[in-house]
Length: 161
Length: 363
Length: 101
Image 1 (cartoon, rainbow over the protein chains, first blue to last red):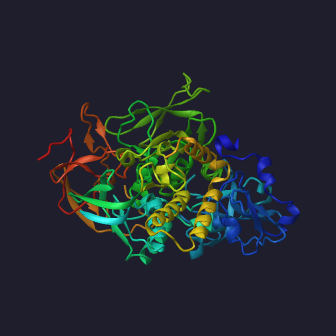
Image 2: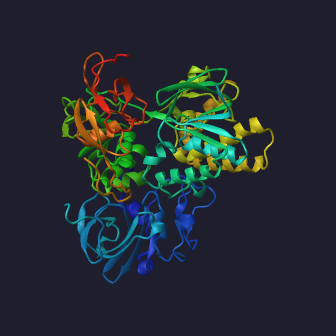
Image 3: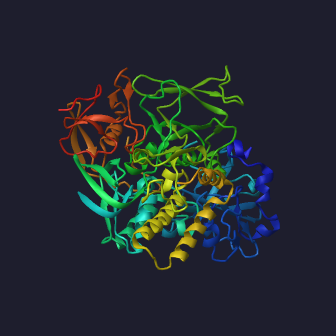
């Protein structure tokens, strides 16, 4: 239970995703389950695709028709609660925030982790972005099998586990 | 005796913001700060802040300290900063006694803003005084300011935002966080912070706490146990965990001592962190011309402390300067920022605490 | 134990500073407090408690709690979590309340 151990239920996770048909293009998935006084996702979005409004405690809503999946909000979110997801054939492709060392490198295979921290498969690193604007939150693009669309959340260094 | 029109005790997020606001209105001020640098506890915050743009949302805490210091430098000719100076006494004639590098002296001021912040609370358990048992803030200081690891294997006691954030920061520094314990039945901090830890494999246990620490000169292991509905340990659930450090993150107590000394009215409001000075809507204590702001007048996030500091800077400058250009618009902006930060479910405690303060007599 | 690499912070390689801990010469880095330098050397016990002589380390690291007090250059009850190390500084564990000179 999320409030007891930090792990959201499958229903909670799925409620943050749009229809899979929309994920033919990359879209931001925001797992912000509480009303927290915070709005950088809204203000950082160059496409006005994230709506919070005047009361910064309101939970963000993604307008998938405007979201381009650019990933700017992913590195801006102080709660690291945003990922970008898309489906390509039998693969799910994610952009995730990462703030640890060592840093993954393109083409490496890292452990793909679920929301409980368990290894679910391998994930292939497609790119690593680390621009100044990201303020040391790296944006990692990872590819896993499509079946892990609702399970995958982050990566772990393959040497550590 | 040195004299100044406006003295601010504490150069953390509240005190520094207060000075900047007052100076931006043309008021000259003196900040007395106990440590070597300005910024208070912001300097060890490596996470990106919540809030909105005006409170530097999405900027890491230590960067916010740099931004505030840059802003202060714009008003350098109006803001005097006295570092490494501990205020040891505050008297009704608005004289402060100060110890700086072994020298003892006094400063008298017309208006004083006390922004001393809060100190880390502690909990009772056997051998809780062993070295290696640290406040979560102490661990942040050690790691993020001085680059020294607190240990290799740590248990975090407390799942408020500080406990969760510091656990994550410990992992970033390469420390193994064995688990996070929370005595309450639910996680205390933002769930996004909890999820961030859990996905990295750190278990968070609610209704569980520490009973005892073992070790001779330093903690070597701890005994933890499940708690029942009345927060009593359940016999038979004890478990020994090997650690070389324990982090205690069980809340903060406002540092009201100087205000108690000067005879300001102090109220007990648990929602605000415990003993807090009674302040008016203008953040003035029950002693004329002595103001209080930041965690001292109610423990909250640093974002609120910065806004409250600016607000108090406005009130204090108003007292000294009389009329202020754009007073109303500055006031409105700051008030609405605070309302934004406090209006959600996480601001409930603060809202209730402030209401109690309002109802608790006149000052 | 120093942090050598960090994903967010940069710890520039500070110059070493020699000081004395209980009469023995030890090394810290420029910018260290006495408490951080000793901790980096693995020294967590700083003094003994006044009555029961129990081990004392720091608790708050920002000058609030007084648990890190030691005798520094003959001055007792110095908050070592706030005091920067200096070349040749003499730091001693404090067995009790400390004596005023």
